Length: 102
Image (cartoon, rainbow, N blue to C red; front, top):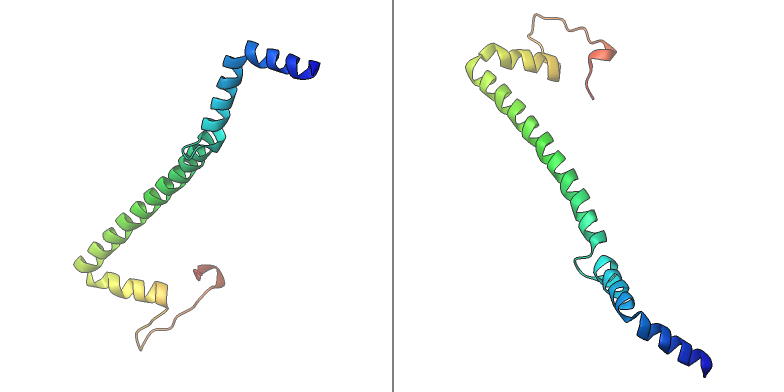
């Protein structure tokens, strides 16, 4: 019984500290909007923003190349030759292993 009384005395003296600690644990780890989840969301948002920037750059590059193809008909032949290894009937193509993109 003495242990129970001393425990009760401890809780009564430190009730605000215990309440604060329970609140921090609840909000920090157990809540739906906990700090741990927010950090995870922040990391995911940062990763997705990086992907958006990468895709935006790729889109701008492809748009530039498409405009180049619309203006210059020789560019179509150049891309067909370099990327798809196509050739005219009277041409010979030499392919080096380092030049092939995979």
